[in-house]
Length: 434
Image 1 (tube, one colour):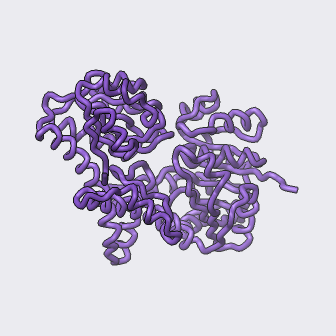
Image 2 (tube, one colour; image 1 turned 30 degrees about the vertical axis):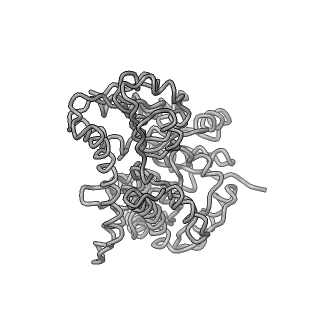
Image 3 (cartoon, helix red, strand yellow; image 1 turned 135 degrees about the horizontal axis):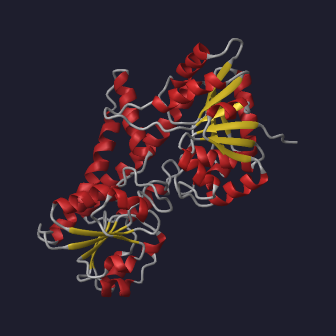
């Protein structure tokens, strides 16, 4: 019979909050810690700081059951837990390296608080060698007689489906120097019923970067192929379908468009490049992947400009979707922000639609009108620019959309619509790789 453990989770961002809530859901007693008092109070009152489908329900249910609680002080949470997950932020530095300040602060707090042996699980995405660094730091600061074992357990969650992904994982990766500590973490994660790879810490740390870097490579590759398709008259949709039917390749991440965004892929590709440079290796493919991704946003804007003979000065453009992908409110490195900045640089007036992240986006785009009504965004605009493939965009009433627009111009950066259908509705339609 499964017996729940006492678990602490430091950090209540996308990874920490989802991890803590799901661990409580499977029967553990979990304390989530964040130093941001307003965020903790918000969560306690039932208001989630992030949008993730199903998260609010799980949090409320487990708070009510007493299995999930929230705190602002690390000491009590660490003291009450046998396993402590570190899930704090690891943003990029300007040179591509990882900012480890939050991780090191969390480790110091754990060392100061622990009065008995602890297993510390690094859930944050961190450079190779972090597990060894963490263990050395913890032991140097530990109280007399207190021992720490550090285990790497990278996450592979997709924003927007993070709760679903937690309960339907492809794999659980556990990197440990201590066989006993690795086994204990494996037992804690056993209820998620996923294949487990036990390895050393360095391999576990690199698996995360390698996975995200490869996914980014697939995206940039298919976007390069889409650009070739436009020049030779091929359809990238058919090309990608034919490629994806090969079991060695698979169909995932072969959707041509304006490139990847969000927190993970941009950060992890830059970090992977930095890791290689740090060991005197020129990772040429990774360098090209990053460059192609940025150029794809510029190509999209060039298409818009070309349709208006290079003059956007008196044009109003409706940008449909702001978050970097649907079903999340994450705007970090969202293509929309770069695209809007370029359009405005060329003199266009921009208004935007997003069903979820309007309030968040308003702080980043103070001069851009944002609405949660797609037809309001389209009213009187010279063109519709599809930047995020929200279901609400895919299901637009095309006749109503055409009536709202001043000109029937559609630039589809996510290949949401069928070109023949759009032409049948009387649109000038420009997609990617079509």
